Length: 189
Image (tube, rainbow, N blue to C red; front, side, top):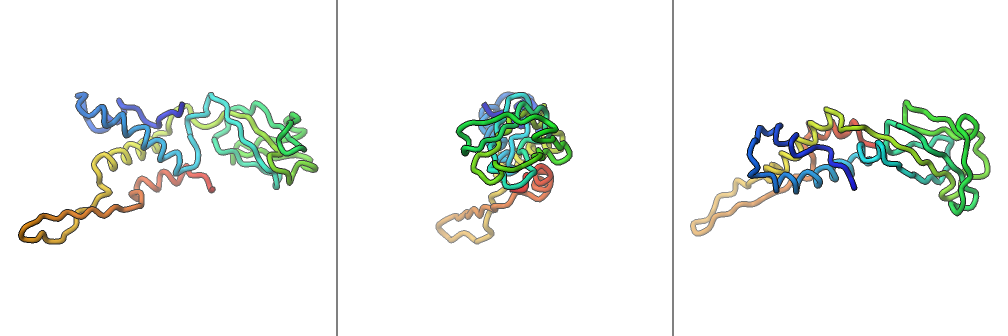
């Protein structure tokens, strides 16, 4: 089950809310905003800190960049010469080397499996034990943004004599102060 990037108690404390009147709405929005942020940045951040993640690569380069960073534990790196049907374990410092600076695996002695589909499988844990503070603030701000429907802009068109008009124009961009923080965690996809 995916982990949310913020909790109900965190958003209530952020908003200064002490009652339970809006809990249903917040409980509805928290997983949606968390999923949006994870999709936008291209990684889950907290879902695979202890739960294993398996990534398959069609290795065409000697450096394989893992999605969940920072890397916590690499359980195994394996290669396949039969397009992922069977895998052969690789030994660290003989078949691969770990690079924590950019969350990558450098393949050593890459030969027969370099250009085949599903030629390398990496099983690892990575990410954060909890949402980093700056990202948490951005997620809180984004939830409030959606909660208040600030993406809707009321039109200034005058209403006719017999009717009232409200036109909503949605803005497809994330507010810049939120986007700047999200982009710090975003994968170059």
